[in-house]
Image 1 (tube, rainbow, N blue to C red):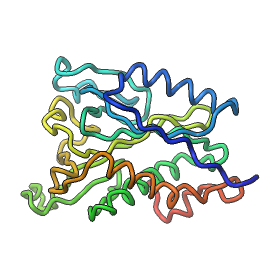
Image 2 (image 1 turned 45 degrees about the horizontal axis):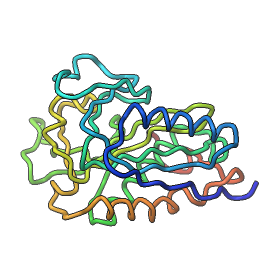
Image 3 (image 1 turned 90 degrees about the vertical axis):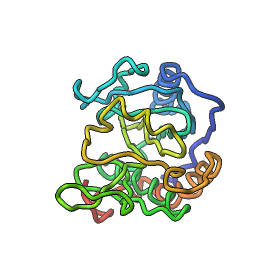
Length: 237
């Protein structure tokens, strides 16, 4: 089988309605499964809202009246979406890229880490905490003396017939106070940050270009003859 063609990239203008975007994404995933459409990556922003993943706990929604709350159907717990946050919906065919969910999540994290590295930010994985984190030596340490860490990117995936949807979000310049209505991803001991909060004058267009450049380095060489393998990553999740 020949190498996989590049996905179709679309930057959606304005603030995308969540329910309408989810319906469009489901339709695109169904078309990809039928072989009627190419893989796709959508770059967008949502109005302020909270989404609940399949592992969301009711007690982690601390201000249910603050913003609309949607059941997303993806993996994970509660997360926030809003202006200033780049949401990336990745509809990729794992039938061709290797049917390995753990490796795919690892690749999504690698994609974020490579994107952040273009701005001099060291993004890191943490065992038991899906997503990408940055160490904050400028903040007081935790009671046990360990350094404070803030989450800069969230990842939540769903598969249907081995086609992925939902994806990831990177905090570029959202209102970080909006995260206060939830316990983000169920993690109470650490906070959230953004590229601008870290002192970087980065625009959404800068992040989009970095995402596009780093995608091929992580995903571009994968083919059916060279499938994704968790063993090949050298790290388990």
